[in-house]
Length: 346
Ligand code: PEP
Ligand code: MN
Image (cartoon, rainbow, N blue to C red; front, side):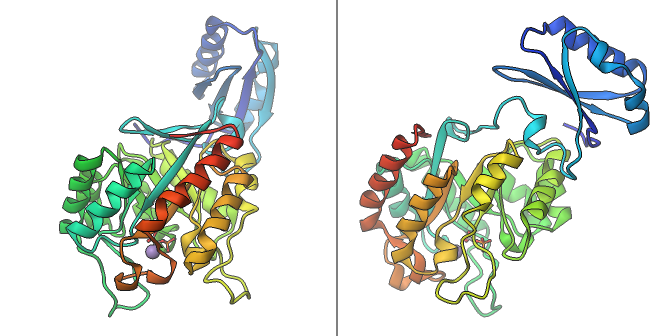
């Protein structure tokens, strides 16, 4: 994996184009010092040409055998843009899938508090058909006096939960000094809303060989989220999921406003899977199911939901966590709608 420059031009090969014709285009580009990123999909092959714009414009690419169309990539995000990939990106972690036709049901506590709390939640999530287990070991809290997470001990508890259930672990990385620990112990690295534009951290996880769940900052535009993802993919890691988790608005009846329109907008703009966190925008558990169903209906590739055995005793985000006793019924409703949408829980 290596840092990539931005592709400026998109070369779409025709449906009947052969592998030799694609190779020929790539070879001609190489001759003039232009590198290429080839994406071969089920129905088409697209080549992202990376190099000087003027030089690219001077090549008669349309005339090459097999070439169907040549288009400039005008959007500021390049590697994550929908047009650059022939197929949608699918995340695979320990055989559990999310993206394309697979829906990821990610659930677990806001914070890892104790071994018992985490293992109990993990067992309930696994038994209800969940895809991955979430849980924070490093917690970014608004107040320095609030519970900050168990750190390394929390990562070890999560690893035990993975052993017990087979569920991949999603956990947040908040500091570059913890990259090695989180990448080693977790299966999916969560970059939280507060770090969405921590470009050093984004580049670090871009060099990691684990999928990344990148959360939208409550005050970031969709374009800023996509540019943040570009930082990760640019380093070579294209296993990135984008997560809408609510934005700041004037509305006070919920903790944040879930920007449900971000789902279809992102699906149009990027090949990366789109996940919705219904828990943090709701801020209260009675809204979590309707927001989850809205996310599924809007075309999300997954949800990440907070679940706790005893939310009243939770050390963080108690009011929005679903009790584990309610999770099987919750999951049943979600799975029914996922299947109605023609997808499979991964
Ligand atoms: C979390 O998922 O527990 C969390 C802190 O979320 P966010 O970064 O979206 O606030
Ligand atoms: Mn939380």
